[in-house]
Amino acid sequence: YHRGGLSHPGFRPILAPCRKRESPVQTLRNQFLIAMPQLEGSLFAQSLIFLCEHSAQGAMGLIVNRPLPMQLGEILDQLQIDSHAGPAREAPLYFGGPVQSEQGFILHRGPARYLSSLQVSDEVVLCTSRDALEAIGANDGPADYLVALGYAGWSEGQLEQELADNAWLTVPATTDLLFTAEPSRRAAAAAATLGINLSLLHAQPGHA
Image 1 (cartoon, rainbow, N blue to C red):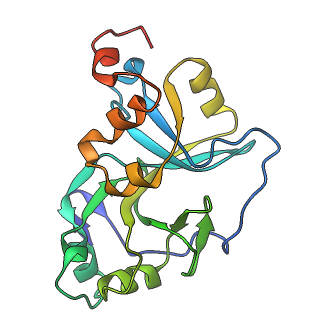
Image 2: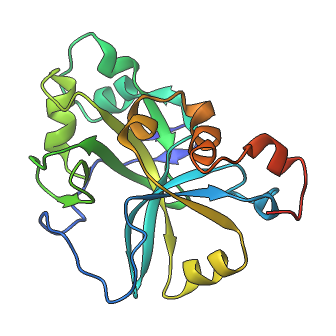
Image 3: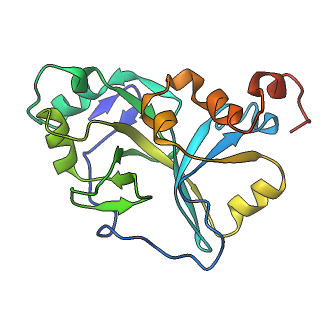
């Protein structure tokens, strides 16, 4: 269907069965990327990204602080998934990134229990399968979750170069920031864990 400029044919199982991948390089999986001032004016300006995968082959993550002007109930209706009245229908949808913007992704607090899941950490699972949405619609899903359309991706060596250019600040992710913090405050709260005032940082371009 088409809604708000986004084409969304439904959740597809694009991930391999749940597993933990080992990387030959130091992985930043399960960390936040905080956009630095030099990204102002770009698609990623003031974004907070949760990295779901990072290896020598590249990286993939979801922007977790940019709600879309639509709610999960609209997705459930369009996919003809039965749902009950309650918080799930009013849950926000997020712009997860510019890649495959028609594809849905669910981050939820573990354990992994749905098809097409990737265990990001001991606490967080990434899922792309319809059965997770069906459980959420029936009020039988995970208590903590975040649903996004699209993702952010980096090819081999691209993220490492952007980090070397000080385009991103990295900080270990926490489930409280990921699932319960106010979206508009997530980036600032993540920076604050490093003792950084993000509003002052963005007020001084070129001083990342």
